[in-house]
Length: 169
Image (cartoon, rainbow, N blue to C red; front, side, top):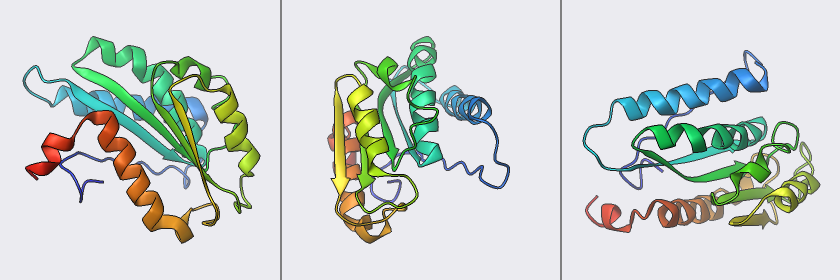
């Protein structure tokens, strides 16, 4: 996304450490709050949290916490995206995202996390919610990466109202 539009993107990897859900969720929230602390002016900073697999559940949990934390800053939770998400860790948090746009993307040929996980989470989610099922791609959604990138980019642009920013980029 940062190659396509003027946004800051942070990638967090934890698989080598394999921490628990609360540790990772806390780290994501701290990262977002630290990034916001470096902003100047009174402009509202729109935040979209995106995660894959275990990270999809983390994104949902972090979204639940960030919703309230960002109200204390110049931040605004514009959306949460879960790519090939697992249910564990997200099931209790996703209903709390009511009013926050959320998108679940999953491949029907995912052999690591069954597509039923995405369907279950989507059923538990409150509006506004969307689900996008890819015909191919596997767990990493790699076979559908171009379609995924375009869909995700458009979804994020719509949520952060970045059309005017992109035209000057």
